[in-house]
Image (cartoon, rainbow, N blue to C red; front, side, top):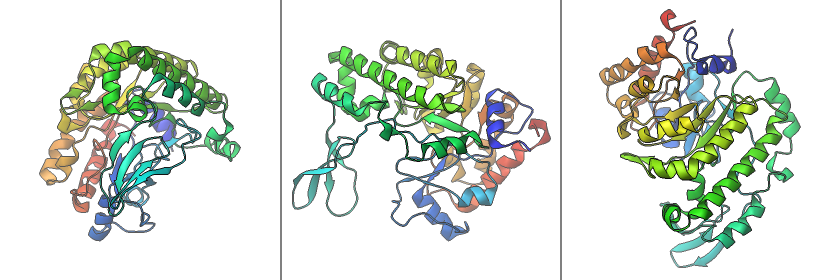
Amino acid sequence: MMDARERFTRIMQFDSGIRTLYWEFGYWAATLRKWYQQGLPKIHGIPDNHPDDKTVTGEGIPSPELDSVKDREVSTYLGFDKGIMRVPVEHWIYPQFTRKIVRETDTHLIVRDEAGITQEVLKQGGSMPHFLGWPISSREDFEKMKARFNPDDPGRFPENWREVVKTFRDRDYPIALGGRPVGFFGSLRDLMGFERTLIGYYDHPQLIKDILVFLTDFWINLWEKVLSQLDVDLALIWEDMSYKSGSLISPAMFTEFMLPCYKRITSFLKSHGVTTIFVDTDGNCTDLIPLFMEGGVTGMFPFEVQAGMDIVNVAQKFPTLQIMGGLDKTKIAKDKASIDQELEKLPFMLRRSGYIPYLDHLVPPEVPWELFVYYRKRMQAIISQPYYGD
């Protein structure tokens, strides 16, 4: 029987003679808590201290994630295939900053967190933090930060690294390098803040380029160590650089600042046998797809429908692009007729192959358990038809 790793590999090679994977992207914690009340058997549950607005990962989100837990009930109930696991190395700031309270008022705390970001938070209750400062605001800050991006620091690898390698060598599921925060827009945003990043393209272009070259060198050197011991099935790059109307930067800016880094890192990966390279970016990324592909990217996800992304159109325009996701989560919340209509995308996508279907982001709590089960069983019945493979 074909395992999830082999199935993933063959799907990414556009083998239309096998069924695609039974995967889902993930869920908000609030969604699963609601589903437990609506009929989802609660076997393991999710931690009581895991906030409603945090992720519960599905098969399409590489685990482990920094602030998430892994779903076990939905996948068991619906018979999903094993999902992606991420190689557990530290891709970001290490050692982290020491979390400290910078200032305190009667109602708020000014805190510098482990990533070096200064933010104002409420003492009581939950709310979005007010971001006040970022670890890099000047070239001097950047030079100081370099010490926290040492690829040779043994602390970047878990203490049981040898056991991890041994386990991964005998796996029946795909493993991935990268994921958040590995990327060339999202990383800048985490280091400099959104506004300073956008202004920096104009006011400090050389600093932006120097940071991106430094990060590229860092990730390549880190991955060299991993790939000398492991063969991995895919690499993941995280950007989240689009919104409903399009990209947050122009194609010209992408070409000048990001494309050289993409070409370097994808060339390195492919020379080490990693031929499947996905980008995770939300919003409407239509204008960026050809640039990502020029940079060596082979696939993208999750293709948010409400932002104007249509996977059938994308697949027709870019026949060699690997695609995951692209099913409208808002349709699943409506009724069975809307679900049936949304699943009409599947026959073309399955014949084309190179595609793993799931919703276009985390499943929101507005989706009733009954309709989610209908959507999944209907989709899995379509996927498993002999016409589409084994």
